[in-house]
Length: 186
Image 1 (cartoon, helix red, strand yellow):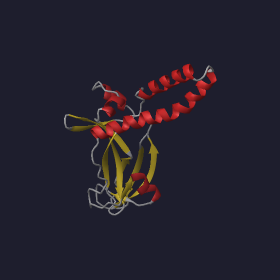
Image 2 (tube, helix red, strand yellow):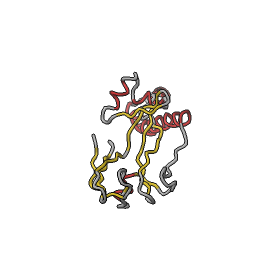
Image 3 (tube, rainbow, N blue to C red):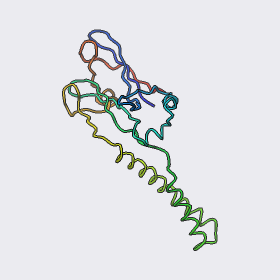
Image 4 (cartoon, one colour):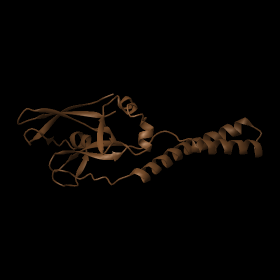
């Protein structure tokens, strides 16, 4: 769920807002922003699910970074990675349990204990392998430096506004503006 930051300029009085991140579909050489919270419905128009788009490398996440030096906001493109299980490791678990049950144990409780011990790492490994494959196949270099001044002193917009308490640049007049409020959009 992205955070939305409401801003107000001290000088010109302009109000604006920035979002912490948004997703976009890369299609025909263009980034098509997906509206939150209906990203899945918009992906269905292209006969995609979030998972298939992530696995095929066409789902990108743009995260807002604020420059601590000049106050400008840049949206940096990242590859949205898959989050669902592929099932590969579930097959390995099933085969391991069957072999254990047949060869070693005659007790269902030992099989259940083995399943619990193997299941959590197997799930984590399954997701890790899935994400690694997507990153290796579709990954790209991510540049987080400021597009306005070139500074490498950038951070996520929430860290700049809330933790560092630094104002951001007003898009209307170019002066630094006050941070008013933030909320999470569901």
